[in-house]
Each structure stands twice: as structure tokens, then as C-alpha cells.
Image (cartoon, rainbow, N blue to C red; front, top):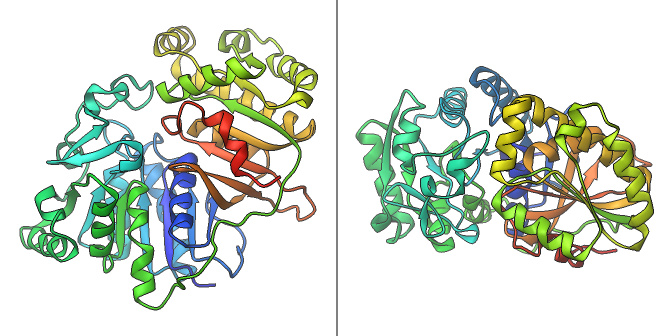
Amino acid sequence: MTVLLGCIADDFTGGTDLAGMLVKAGMRTVQMIGVPQEPIGDDIDAVVIALKSRTTPAAEAIEESLAALRWLQQAGCKQAYFKYCSTFDSTAKGNIGPVAEALMDALGSKFTIACPAFPANNRTIYKGYLFAGDQLLSESGMRNHPLTPMNDASLVRVLQAQVKGKVGLAEYSTVLKGEAAVRERFAALQAEGCNFAVVDALSNDDLMSIGAACADLPLVTAGSGIALGLPQNFRRAGLLADDLVADTLPPTGGLRAVISGSCSIATQGQVAAMRAAHPSFNVDPFELARGSDVVGAALAWAAQHINAGPVLIYATATPEAVKAVQAQLGAEQAGNLVEDAFAAIAKGLVGLGVGQLIVAGGETSGAVVKALGVSGLRIGPEIDPGVPWTVGITRDASARPLALALKSGNFGTPDFFLKAWSRLAS
């Protein structure tokens, strides 16, 4: 097996987002949950190794990321890709910068880009400032994120505070001129002693130009948007066919369910739309903390309703409600309680016959796939930008195929939970 593009994602849903973009661009892609312990097959063009490193201590994030890179290098990857969220959030001191520099050192690279732009989801960069729609990121809902609040929209400033090297900017006036101009700007920044270039981008055309200009970089660091522009580099080099069908999945049957642990604004709207159309069950963190059998109650409730159509089990709440829970229980304990509960609920739902499962929230998705023994995901058709259907890879070859959609909290249209099933072969 020779992997063309080897990717390291700092959370689970972000990894799925990236993998989905690569499939759309014609690369047969699998996402592995953690560093693989076994071979993954020969019909693969790109591998995404999804870690849980966005909010871990920086030293731990670096260690895990380097282990992932070593595996990808052994698989023969031609280019490495460090993927972070389109909101560029991790922790106050990192981990984006420290991990990127560690990967650069391991690859012997002196220069890379930083570009979390994802125009399809209204994440754009102009003059080095990250926008969510028409708002600066620092004025969007991300300023109230319970784990990784973003109070500065200047990517140059945020990244410079995290790295030892020098951070420069490739402005939109350059990007607009196309690939050659972007390459020239990269060369000029390197001549000025810069190790990172924050790159402006307002459209998918911009991402294509930037991706083409990155063809010779050992490492790319970005959100998933740049994935649009990288596969064509391999085609031009004669390493990737033009006519590959990359999003085919084996058919799955079974019952349908949604689990939602995300408290993002987008997911709040999606939960509200689902609750209006289908039965729903609320997981209360205070009841979990009191030792109530919330998992048993949720599964008993699901057994009564799930045969009639998709059901929703959720802990999604407003920022005010989340802060109240965290104030009383502590942020870490509250998060662990909900994640553990959803992991057990997911196992129970599969036991009830669920074969098609949507999970909202990065931390929730990570807990669920671990509980289900999923070691990887074969990536299929896109539901909304950044969110594809997948089929779980397990070590049990006799296990029934399980379709999973792992949705980052901020992604998807308000009717995401309602329309997702139409994109999946029964």
C-alpha cells in the first residue's frame, strides 16, 4: 500500500469532515480512530488518522501526532496534512502551533501554511482575520465556547503566540492572482524568515489556487477546505486517476437514531427541528451525577419508539444551561458523565437493531466510536458540507455494517437530522 496523502486530525468529527472532502475530490479515503494497529487495504489513496488532541496537554498532543506521522510515513505518504477546526480553536497556549512545529521538525520542513478557511460553511479569512459568516470569529458564538473560546480573530496573532517561528501573511490580493502568485508570496515570506503563512481565502476557487501552490510542501496545516485543492496535484503527477468513484459504501439496513451531545448553536437548531418531528429523550447531567440510571431509562424509552422511525437522544443545551451545569459539577466531570452515558446508549441502540446512527459533537463522536469498537471509517456520500455518511470498520469481519454520520457541532443545516437518511442507500 502507498498512501498519497497522510492526514492527522485533532478530533474525530474534524477527521470525518476532512475525509469527506477528499472523497468528494476523488480520493478513496479511510479514517482511522487513533494510530492504526493493522494494515488497512490496498485500494486507498488517503488516510486520515483522527486523534483526540485538540484540548489535551500540548506535550501529549505532540506525542500522539508524531506517532501518527510515523505510521503514515511507513505507509509511504507523499504529503502530510495536519487538520484542525475551521474555527482554529484548541487551547490558550496551543495545540495547533506546537503540534505543527513538531511535525515540521520531524519532516525536516522549514515552511508551511495555516489556512482554516471553509467557505462552504461560512468560514473565510481576509487580511488574516477569520470570519464566521459576516462576523469576526471573536464576535460569533465561538466567543462563548465552553472549552475553547476564541476571543481574537487575528490568525497571525493567535498563531504567533503559539509558535517559536515567525508567522507571515499571504493576503487576498495575492491569492486572487492565482497559483503562481501564491507560490511567489510563499517564497518571499521564506526569504523574510517566516516559517508559517496565514493565507486569506474567500471562495472555493481560492482554496484550489492555494492547494495547487502547496504541491511541494512536505506539510500542509489547514481546516478541511484545502482538501479541495490537493488531489489535483497528485493527478498532475500521474499518481491519481481521473475517473475513480470514491464515495461508494456497502448497503446498510437496520433502525435509525440520532445522538447529540453538542451544545453549539447550529446543533441546538437541528435538535429543535428533530424534536418537532420525531420522539426525543433528554439526557440530564444532574441526573447522571446523582447516579440515576439514565442510560437504562433512555434505552427503555428507545425500545418503545424506535420501530416507528428515527429517534433522538440528546444532551444539547443553551450556553447558559451548560455554564450552570459546569459551575455545579465542573466542566471536566460534566463532560465525562455525558460522554460515558452516550457511549453506553450507543451500544444499547445497536443492540436494539440500530444500523444507521447520527452522532453530533466531536467529543461525543469519539466516545461513541470507541464504545462500538470502531477502529476506522470508510467514507461515503456527503450529507452537508463537511459531514459524510460512513461505514464503520471493525476487527470483527462478521459484524453487520453500521452506517455512521459523525457531525461536528457547528456544521449542517437546520434540517440536517431530518434529511440525512435520504443520502444513504438502504
